[in-house]
Image (cartoon, rainbow, N blue to C red; front, side):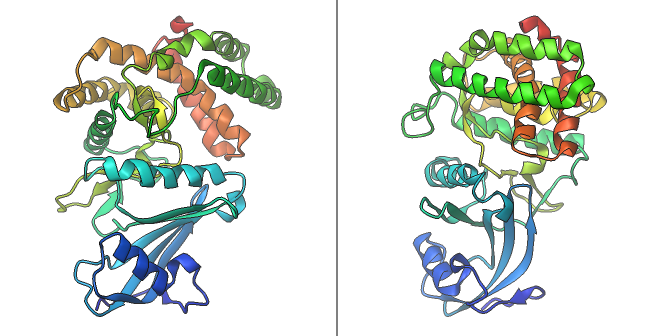
Length: 362
């Protein structure tokens, strides 16, 4: 029987139903992680809120045979303030761990022991592998990772993209394709948000940037042709900043893991790279690593068996993705993400657009 130190043990009346010993016992047995033993006690070791979710680290005590069973778990649920407005994110992440995670090569994402979305109550939960003792996030936001850490992250992202690259299940049993009508509706919705966003910013959004946004909206149908080609696409993370990757701690021989999958979808893979670098890094850091990381990404695709996707095609896709990401701060503003996030993202991505000459694509 494992003993846990620190935290607080809770009675079953204090625990949410999903964290009660009986529920955890059944879930772990169904997942093949527990044989004859049973969970006897549950302790909350740590809990915190993210921008849109609540994370609790649960310590477990067992009775009976529990060799190999997890000594702790991560319970992820909705953030109380966003439970209704962002319920789709929970539904989407539950779908990821139901449909994609079991068919993803091992060592790329955390193991999921239980997941459920309740349509009636719009509540959801995930019971995930706890990697806190073996892995860590590279840095505290907003500090970018070191060169070595970033290379490990991008290599892992490339291997994950490669695993789903032009996969026959895309749009069939995994995810769905957006039609040209869907894309048009998406842009129409964006345009409405943008008008209100621009009104709010007033003279803080220059005329040059306003022209850029209007041209992007006007030419969105042509720019969307890359996606609608349905060629050289994969499952994208949708929120692939470097703080959504767990790196092995010093001295631990393990792989980098990707987490937080509430925005996954079928898309152009460079969208993740552009979001990571152009949206989150200031010019000096981005310019110093961008080419090397794109080279590494392409080399990793090749070694993973991807063919017919040239280095030049990667560059074109990357520049197009950077251009599309000027929409990201507007979407973030529209769902009440704090200005400390979307304002800095806006400034950084606009500098990347200028550096890379993305306006030429218009």
